[in-house]
Amino acid sequence: MSASQIQPAKGKLGVLLPGMGAVATTFVAGVEAIRRGKADPIGSVTQMGTIRLGKRTDNRVPKINDFVSLAQLDDLVFGGWDIFEDDMYTAAMNAGVLEKDLLNEHKDFLQSIKPMPAVFDKHYVKKLDGTNVKGGANWYEKAEALMEDIKQFKEKNGCDRLVAVWCGSTEIFLEPGEEHLTLRGFEEAMKANSPKISPSMVYAYACLMSDVPFANGAPNLTVDLPAIHELARERRIPIAGKDFKTGQTFMKTVLAPAFKARLLGVSGWYSTNILGNRDGEVLDDPESFKTKEESKLGALEHILQPELYPSLYDNMYHKVRINYYPPRGDNKEGWDNIDIFGWLGYPMQIKVDFLCRDSILAAPIVLDLALFMDLAKRSGMRDTQEWLSFYFKAPMTAEGLYPEHDLFIQLMKLKNTLRHLKGEELITHLGNEYYD
Ligand SMILES: NC(=O)c1ccc[n+]([C@@H]2O[C@H](COP(=O)([O-])OP(=O)(O)OC[C@H]3O[C@@H](n4cnc5c(N)ncnc54)[C@H](O)[C@@H]3O)[C@@H](O)[C@H]2O)c1
Image (cartoon, rainbow, N blue to C red; front, side, top):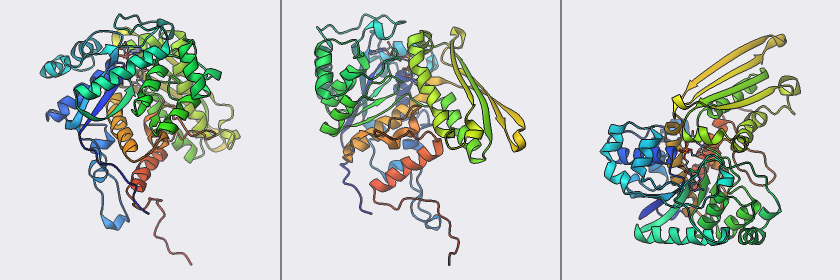
């Protein structure tokens, strides 16, 4: 197998963050703490992961970071947009995820990162209101203003390349419509200020027009539109989404494949969450919750394949709830009650109580996405990056394909993509038994 031509990761990589709230600030403060040697990059596949190459007896297991050329943490610079004027230090203090002492250690650095004025409209995120917002007659003009921001950021910071990861709030539920079908139609809809265009789509358009790969950490449509796919193919830019896979869905995509592997039935799966951060407040609005609910519901259906195993999964009742509960802040608690059945139909139950920290789980995902999307761009990959499904609750796929949700198949796909890029043999896990 021949290796792809991968452009070297030289110079600075600018990481643009539309939305500089809990996840974005936890990510940036974390990277700074890690590069100053104060912490380990726990949870990051690019920083801690290894990859087996060749046969098991070959003993070749390099770190992923040594195997493929990735931007190094010291070469990252950060910027972004938010509807609030708070710099990253103030925003991180308000988010309350990281300890004050840790933030104070990096105060000057975090204070130096100030959000550029956002493209925003309250119609799409009902619970928020901010003043750091761009003017402009229509979405198209606002996209042009974003492109100017991107150009200036790149120049000012001496960046060689840029990537964007959407860390903004979850927008109201929108369905793809005729405005999103073609690039030309999409541009016209932007000029007509159509309500079918949301702010996150405007960022996506501006980034792709500026040759910036775009990963979407929220469940909004954003880059999951035919018009944006067209743009991504035309300009040869990688895109990926949707919705970081962090807490409950992470667990779901580990447990459900195990039940299916053992042909155990599932009659019900009830998931509920309490969380008290700003994300929780935004999701308290039924229209934003609907976007999240759709994203969270899809995984089980695709993993369990009731159409292939009707007696095991056809009548499964699946419910997902999110409750805004301020006292918990960013420390979410996710409960799952799973009703399963086994041999002769005998019922059993499993309870999962995951006391997690939302942004602590999301931050390494933002880092990996930034580095892998940059690698994809340098390797000449474009449009949907399915090999990054590992990081998403509702992975985007090529048209007509169903998404892969099983975490371990996703990881195999990710690592095999890296092997493929470097011209290494793919790992099939075929044994060394003797065959006649
Ligand atoms: N933390 C997790 O585990 C996790 C998992 C999956 C998805 N997500 C998604 O990631 C996103 C960020 O989560 P968070 O906890 O940091 O939320 P947050 O509320 O702390 O931060 C979001 C920020 O986006 C800003 N924003 C909203 N609309 C904007 C716009 N149009 N332009 C610029 N900024 C805008 C808000 O002002 C806010 O500061 C949310 O959509 C969330 O649903 C988070």
